[in-house]
Image 1 (cartoon, rainbow, N blue to C red):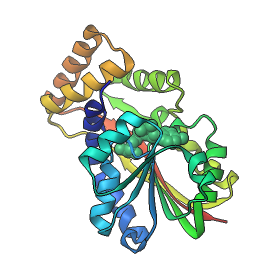
Image 2: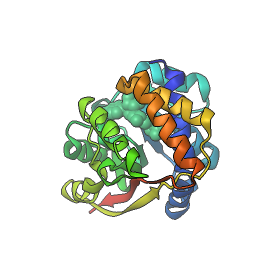
Image 3: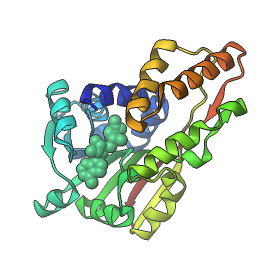
Length: 247
Ligand SMILES: C[S@@+](CC[C@H](N)C(=O)[O-])C[C@H]1O[C@@H](n2cnc3c(N)ncnc32)[C@H](O)[C@@H]1O
């Protein structure tokens, strides 16, 4: 799938989570941090937002060359590099703030990954986890839409991710030697209107990603539109955050 499609999805995701994210930026005093790393930057949506707030380039790392090149082209004022946590450790890089957004859920060994993040932090540095979802806690109403959480969870599991990472966040951080504050960055409640153009784009993303067929897509769209028309559509979707520092 091309990088533009992922970017579209990351933008929408970032828009939904913006209030919680900006609250976190204020809470940690984002602009006061010097060496900031956006690890697993994807198309650079969060990287660029941070650069604009701080007024200086942000280091952005991703292991996927295609999405990284897209980010470089779209938001050229940041410092991009291809690689993973091991590359940064080998180079003895250190940061006073590391930001993760929808990254921990994709690690095969999240505990080891977090221990490496800890080594990449300066003494007194902060790990800011902006968003880690928990699809197991998702509630869709009306009940006919309850199957949505299984679509997402199955796809994430099949792709090697953990759809239930959110609930494990506190424990993983504790075990990897961080003291942390963990909470909910958002519990999304969709508005009563169904913006067809936005949702068509988002469902097409999931269609390509999870291989949903046209029939399923039509069914989802019909149920969404009906529920919105009756003003009874509700989604509660726990997305967790963490502010962590060394013990
Ligand atoms: C779901 S995307 C999130 C992108 C971005 N953080 C955002 O919120 O818009 C996760 C990104 O992390 C990258 N990633 C995951 N694990 C990584 C690792 N161990 N090293 C480098 N990049 C990684 C993936 O390639 C992908 O681009």
